[in-house]
Image 1 (spheres, rainbow, N blue to C red):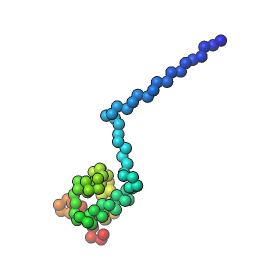
Image 2: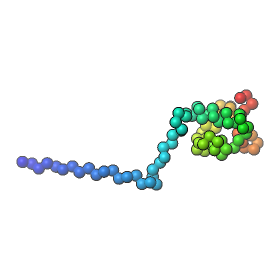
Image 3: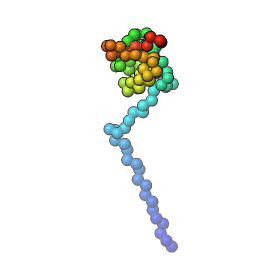
Image 4: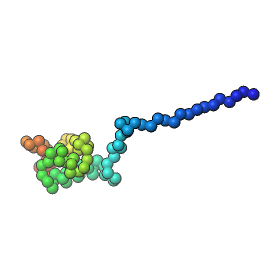
Amino acid sequence: MASAAVLTIKPASPIPPTLRRKPCRPRSGTSSPIRSLEILELLAENGPLGHTAISGHLEIPKSTATALRKDLRSAGYVLRDEDRKFTLSPGC
């Protein structure tokens, strides 16, 4: 009679806390188009705002605000003024 082979499975090692990432998800039910509209509304209500103010008011990462703002700027909805603040374009 042949002896049966024993298969030993080691549990996966835990991910160290320094390598864990917080999931990058918008607030529940909020998508990029909605965020873009929120930027437009924010500029309409408050006038010219800087990059940090936009991300702070909307409580989104600066990188997200940058990507959205670049899209709005390339589409002609947002302009950058002499003070390097962002404002609605005259056509909006």
